Length: 231
View 1: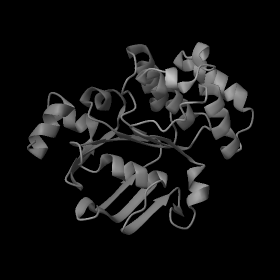
View 2: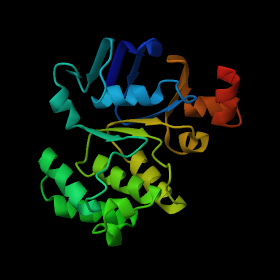
View 3: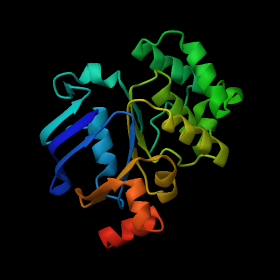
């Protein structure tokens, strides 16, 4: 469970998140939708512990992110929108490096299993600077998942993926037992995997509802988003 209370974040004079309060439950996939700059990625980065915030409180599985950040990071799998990779390493070398930092048992086995799942086994020994955008996304995805985190924070997770890999990821997401947050522009992804959706505008949550209820009132999630936000 991720509980957020009165969260505020500014970048200089720009208000990125404006006094946000919400709770995301276990065994639940929640999507965050909004225009660029609405605060989706900022919220995920803060929950992942890679970005500080100005005021408020965040509890993840009952632990304060300020007091127990190192412990909480072990329970989180974070996929950024733009992968942070070391281009001169091979995909396998990069993942083994991360595994050493996370004290992952049998990292070779975990890497092999996820590489087979995503169809990139043949590319593991190729330097990352030779990868396509989709390949970099898959390596970044393995980095977010191979320690089997309780909670997933996924920023545009199907960006750059081929349809088969996107479907594989969608199936994986729906099997998660912890809390999953997805920042996305894709209404179709929300309809496929999410239980709830939050609409953000200018750092504020303007609406939140179950996906099923929204689809009872609107033809698509995108229709609901444009109608509710006036975008």
